[in-house]
Length: 368
View 1 (cartoon, helix red, strand yellow):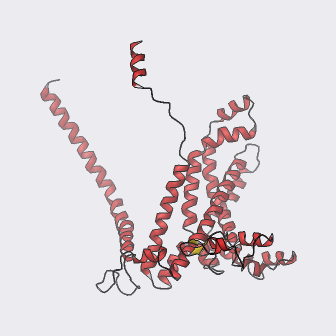
View 2: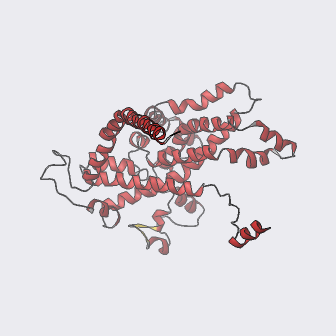
View 3: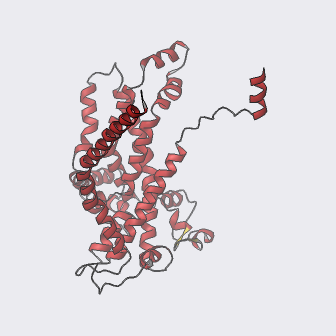
């Protein structure tokens, strides 16, 4: 082909590619506009509110709204007072909530998926539907049902009364499970904690308060959330199990591997992407828990069910401190991103690459 023909071909190719680029931008422009208008713009406005002392009156962009800079953020970590104390209590509660709920719902979902994936199980469709049904039911409706169950005259407290346990006082106990267990075993007195733990701490809370554990009320909410979310994660694991080639399991069976060995060395490695997705969704969901707290406890008893998401709502819409409420939301966002990146690093592929050859080894190999 001549030089003129090659130039013409390049111009035609450039023109086609240019048209594709323009067409592509035209197709995605409506979605970019929608995301910018209803997602990016509100985030930017909320970020501005977090830097002001806006009380909800008028516009946050009015000239009379005080600009406080990072004061709303420093009040959460550095300034002694009720704001930092409540925020740190909410962080402590949510840490225990995440530490219990994420492993529990992940293991339960994996176990249910392994059971309903068995070919010998009769009525698999029924069990899959039954396990998934709580996930599609309104969380508010389920929370109201749990309120009736755990009310003073509810079924749970009636059963506890039959067993000789004062249910209402038990669920209203503000102490954590760790303190209750240590006190029950006689290893520690919750009213007189060790001086080394009571006199030192972090961000305004003593180590004794940080190590309290979830309260009975928070544990009840954790049970509710695990029950309602395990069905969704079960479907994710079940879809991943459907993609595992049966030849791998058959080959391991021929080699004499036991059921546990096949699960550990064949099935679970194939479920790594699904496990990463489930843990990521679990972390995000547990750090954003709000509706169960709002319906069932609103932070009671004594703030042991208080979470950052609910504290942000209460600070902004009840106490009319919109700047502090927005700051709590952005701190919560950073916590979620950090935790997600951390668990991604922990669950990364640890396959060690082959060692690189030295330059003289490569040269000697080329000479031989």
